[in-house]
Length: 403
Image (cartoon, rainbow, N blue to C red):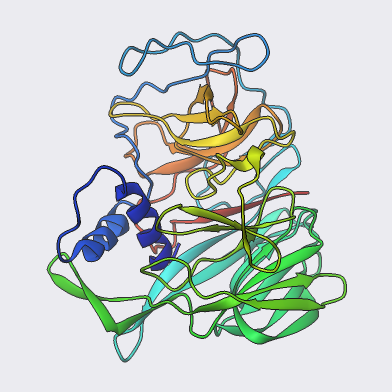
């Protein structure tokens, strides 16, 4: 996660019921987020996890309210199809549940430049499908994996990049290059893998500039600047693309990366000011939010809609002594279930999700991958715990896809 994204998340968290910010607010937010990268999470010490209460049909919460505990009904989360490595962080061997696979992950490092600018550089580790092990591939500044795990879209190290590579995940070689007239800084596949949305920039979106420095905890630090120019929708099969101008929509930062919505007919953009989320058509025009995606927030709950579209992953729902997440009605936003975990990352099926959660006996930012289930009172660990230190070799971010 780069500085732009840290600021964006923090500003959104601070946006409600607070007085106007004093001088240096953005800097304080940056510093706080660097120290505490996870979203508004509860302390882990002495935690008793909140869980789901199953009812007939869609499960509903049966607790008596905040701080009163939970009446648990339901069994164990199914371990069907689980391939875990609880002693590994970052993972060395394949992690998967059903057809939801950890296809790759990345770590990041802040690299100081001679002029005191800083660039956040990512290093990807990609699953070798023959050996079942993750292998470091330092060639790429950005990598997105297509559904089916046959192809990844990649950008070379220097951003913005003049071309997109289509990487064959079976051979590790670039099968084809797609040149673009505008420099690219971010990529996302459509749900069916047939298209890419490439966000374009006139500057490196991962660079922070000393010339635009801001105060952070009584010291000056470089900050990003708006640099998004637009986006291109790329046909993966033909390489044909259609570029549209679209400057950055938010405030602090270099411009938000666009991605496809749940059915691939629209583009999804999260911004750091009201309304928070914007849907656009494939030519960039702002459109109404689809009814079934009214409560999708891919920042606080990356899992989004369930495979059958009847549920949506919700945000953190714990409090001071517990961690929990929630599942919502996608149209009304009503809470339908409370689950364990801190952040819901990916749906495995219509009742199970992969999440981040605190490792037993660890601090609130020592998170590990777990499997949680609607109506289940336990979790299944999938990985070892990450370090809480940002931009370190053991603070990794997962990339899931369906095989």
